[in-house]
Image (tube, rainbow, N blue to C red; front, top):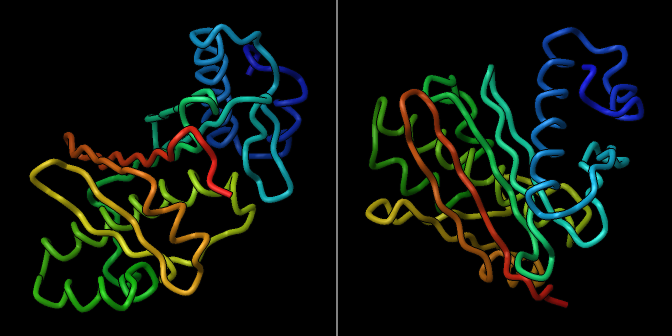
Length: 199
């Protein structure tokens, strides 16, 4: 953890070694991303809801699982919000499907069975995690899984998101675009909002 700021190190001061290593890797990648954007290296701390506090004018997202860590950082002028997520393809989600899927998604998944249905639940979970991270900067609240519905275009490895019951959230989601990659034993998803924030 020598490569991160003391103020960042304090965030995980009492955590187990695995968590410290994950956190440190993420912050090192953040520093590299800032450098690529021409932004001076600076600490990225955590807010009251454990969200990363990005430098003024930037949005970003951090995700990790095991030894894999992914960071996305962009200027607000070109991206109004970004979310990334990585999950293992063998994650056990079958018992969580009723929590992850919206009513419409659950109805569509009933036509599937076995491993294919589990794959859909995992992919939907990851896509929603990316969506939640991207819109948090606008809503500053956590979103329940059933509030968001994901529709995949598997031919293009893309997805769109929508919401019911919250017009502002629905407008934000429909303005964004998502994508995914399945590689080896990993699912990686991303979701981007346009650069001009929606009032």
